[in-house]
Length: 262
Image (cartoon, rainbow, N blue to C red; front, side, top):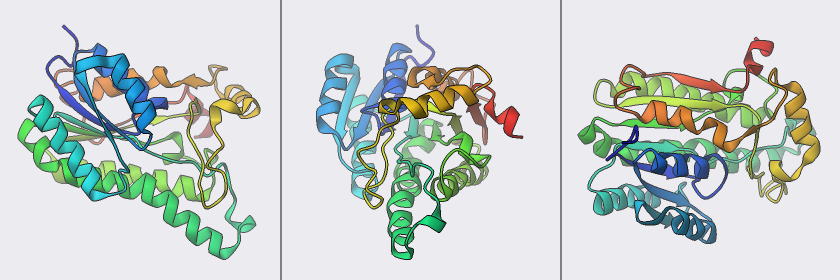
């Protein structure tokens, strides 16, 4: 029996990177998964890999209707929703605002905060009733940039600090019926993309060896994490047994980097 046997989870940004790794691990632990992502082809591959325990929904989680559809799919296909994981996100590639035009700052803010922050709020709102019914949990993918500077540019860091605030506030508001927690990965070799407004949407961390080497050099463990390295944190937080006393907790999974920055 897995740690999450009989549970159902909804995950955004589930077609690649940390979201995909978490979806796979949750199924291994006995859960059913609804995977939501904009990439329909990658979702199809994930569905083929995971089989009947995974349902997929192609769409943009910055749209309220898509978030609601994901919750409805979980309930229709698997009978309930126990965990919602707000994981979708984009990166600003350390872009400094003093090197951007004013109009670019505005446009990049709108794009990045819509994806990183608004999608989390919409998903939380869409899931609230179902999670309250199951006495479930919300898990937010934060970042070591939720605590310290240097993990991205100003816009990215601001968005991740906002997610930290969402975790704390909802943990306060929704207890005791719903537990709300987060995972804060450090530099990870994934396909995390940039922004259309900054013409960096095609950039991927896993294809930029110099950046990977920089992340590994900075880590006390002397390595850049793989997406799978963080999946166990989500299992712990989702578990109704092992995570029963965890609320308003953000697990920092960055190889100890935060100890050097603090």
